[in-house]
Each structure stands twice: as structure tokens, then as C-alpha cells.
Amino acid sequence: MRQILHIDINSFFASCEQAVDETIRGKPIAVVSSLEGRNCILLAVSYEAKAYGIKRTMSLKHAQSLCQDLVLRVANHTMYQDFSDKFIKVLCEYAPIVENTSIDEAYLDMTGTERLYGDIKEFAKKIQNMIYDKLLLPSSIGIADNKCLAKMASDYKKPLGITEFYSANIKKQVWPLSVDTLWGVGSKTLGNLQKLGIYTIGDLAIFDKAQLKIYIGESSSEMLHKYANGIDNSKVISYDKNNAKSIGKEITFEEDITSRDIIKKELLLMSEKVATRLRKVGKKAKTVTLKIKYNNFTVITRSHTLEHGFNTTNSIYKTAVDLYIKQCINSMPIRLVGVQVSNIEKNDKEQMSLFTNIDDDKDERFEKSIDIIRQKYGYNIIKRNI
Ligand SMILES: [Mg+2]
Image 1: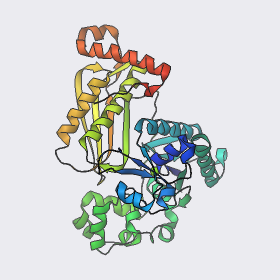
Image 2: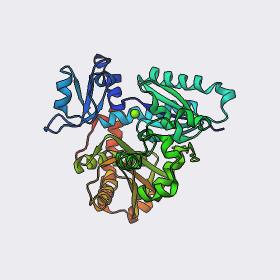
Image 3: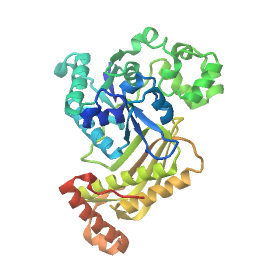
Image 4: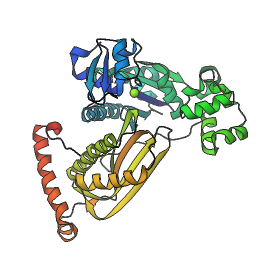
């Protein structure tokens, strides 16, 4: 039997803010996209704020009417990414296989480590304490024999839960749960399922597959039917940073995003991180890939390959934005965006002088001096604007 853990940081953005500022620990806080504009979005709320009935989807005005003392913080995505990197580093110290699936979530494959770590539940508790001791971030952990169940188990009890779901016990543990707690069921699918009289995961598990296909489509019905029956054979895949065939960054928003400006700003921040990494390892890439996950869980990736290798923010950002503009003719809300570069080669100076255009060369020299300043004074000392 496999032993898979899914670890999810609770109220990630809000918890990061409380971790760096002890004066707001234990207080109701909300992270907002900006303080300007009437349509301010609540991106994350602390558990103390949730106790007042404040939810992520609320308007700021509504939230403040529920709690006058609500503390506000403007989102600082660079800081959250740094926390995320540290979170993954802690996991990599203990687990043989770590898959980082979003800014605040990861899977561990702990199969075969019992002799090393003993009881899996004890190990989960140790990891949870370690993340709190080192980073002051609360997490929930799911333990299961596959990824789907592990993910659902970590969702089951928040904050600071540890829950075990096993496919052998699925009828007793998972079937009574509401069908919207099943991994992959979004609000649209939920509506369709309810029309069919499917309210629990058990209802779905025993529902006629051919009928289901007619109402929610072939691929969704196949996948959800498997999940409802506790079947998921997908592997936990670790990402080897040192021997990377690709370098990428992605961000999952706590709130679905439709604003093009916000997406472009995130693309710029990620392009900059990816370019910095390329220069750090002395490489250039030729292909840029844009990844978008919409709020209905559809994922699209689009790539473009340039003639010459590049390692500058500008070249990555421009290509990523081109791909984004071409792709986003609709205004479907976006849950995740990512930028990845591949087709990586050594940064050969002679090649560069022959084939690189002068602008790229200038950009590279300029950005290398930024790297040096940042190395000395910290990454956040210099900020770019779109
Ligand atoms: Mg989370």
C-alpha cells in the first residue's frame, strides 16, 4: 500500500502576514489586493477573522461591518513565494519524494519509510510541528493511499488537522461526505450533479456511468467516478531543482482573478524570478511556456520557442504576455498562472555575441548588475513595474 501525505498551509497569505508581524498574531486579519478602489477583494482571511463570519469572497465593506477591528494587509506575493520556497525546503529534508502543486500545497510519497520514521500519523504530526516551529505557519495534513484521498483528507479538518482516509474504508469515511468536497467538483459541476440527485460522494460512486457521461461530459465523468470510488493511480512526482530541464514559477490565487493587470503583474514577477534563476545557473533557454488554470479546473499551456537563447526578464515577460493575450480572448476567471522556460542550454559567450541581438545583450548586462545588488541587499530592494 502506498502512503501519501498532502500538506496544505491554512489561510496561507494571512498566516504569512501573522508570521512576520507578531502584533497581528491571534487577531482577525484580511489580506487584500489593494486598498484603493471600492471593489477591493479579500484574498485571504485569518481564522480569527473567520470566527466573525468573514469569508474570502466578501467585499471589504461587508467584512468591516462584521468586525470593526479587522486588520488589513496588502498582498505581498514576493514574500509569500519566499515562504513557499522555505516550506518546500522543510519537506525535502524529511521526505524522499516531494511534489509542490501550488504555493501552499505539496504531496509527499512516504511509501517504504516506516522503518525510518515509524508510524505515519506520528510522522505527520512531526512535520506539522516542524513547519510551525520553523516558519510559524499552521498546516493541515491528509494521509491516504492515493493523492486524491490525501488531498480530500487534508481539506477535512482545518486548521491544524491530521486526517487519514484509506480507499479500503471509503464507504464508511468518504461516501457520506457532500459531493462538493470531492476533488475536482467545482460549482458548475456541483449544479449538474445535484440536478441528477447526486448529493453525496456515495451517490456519485454508485451512479450509472453512462448516464453521468451525458450530463457532465466524458472526461469529467470518468475522472470523478474514479475519485468517488477512491481510485487514483497518479504518482507523486518530485521536481529536481539541480538537474532541471525546465525552470518555472507558478502562483495559485486564493481568489479567482479576471483583471488583466493583476495577471500581467504576476507574469512579470515570475518572469523576473525565472530569469534570475537562469542567470544564477549560467544557462539560457529558448522556449517559454505559459500555464493557465481556470476556475473550472481546465488547464491550458501554450509555448513559444525563440530563435536564440535568452535569460532576461524582458524576453520571458514579453513572450509570456503575448501568449496570454492570444489565449485570453474570453474573460474566464483564472485560478493559477505559471511561467516556465525550457530548451535550456549553457550560456555560451561566443554564441551569444554572434546570435544575440544587441538589446538582449544590454538587458542581460543590466539585469546581471541587478542580481549583484540583490545578492548584497536582498531580493526586494529593487522592484519592477509593468
Ligand atoms: Mg491553503
